[in-house]
Amino acid sequence: MKETKFNAKFMALGAIIAAMYVALTIIFAPISYGAVQVRISEAFTILPLFTPAAIPGLFVGCLLANILGGAILWDIIFGSIATLIGAALGYLLRFNRWLVPIPTIVSNSVIIPFILKYGYGIDMSIWLLIIYIAIGEIIGCYVLGELLATAILKRKDIRNLFSRDDKKQAAVSEDDHTPDEYDRD
Image (cartoon, rainbow, N blue to C red; front, top):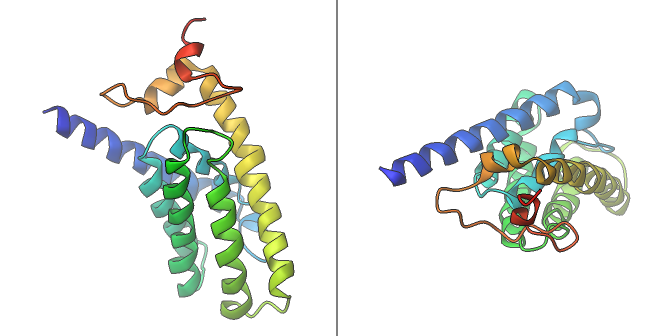
């Protein structure tokens, strides 16, 4: 019975994360697509810090956002894979919250420029596209993602939504503090 409960919560969290990713990407569509983009939804790439359910949630969210946003097939496939790579590697780096966004920034900065240049035919150098995408990812993942992480860390009720049944959590640090240290307040 415990296994079913964990799976249901895992799937529900993943679905919620996917839905929020899609909603924010579509709401902010004018800045979510193109050579110069800042996906506000990329702030959710910090969520592997709190739950492994963020990995499929971010992948499905990106996949759906690209489909609904009218992306070409290569962008739907490889853009979503870039997000999956970033989320999975970010989860592996969850021992330090400052490292979690790096794989998403790198994977998107390496993969997306080639899709933009060769899939969409954007007439810019690959290096310029890499710089533009990297800047957008840094804003989305680090700036907005860290604001989101800070808000989650300060709210025990929100952190509890991400806690697993086995109470085994990552060593989430805000200046070397774990989530349990916030519970003493």
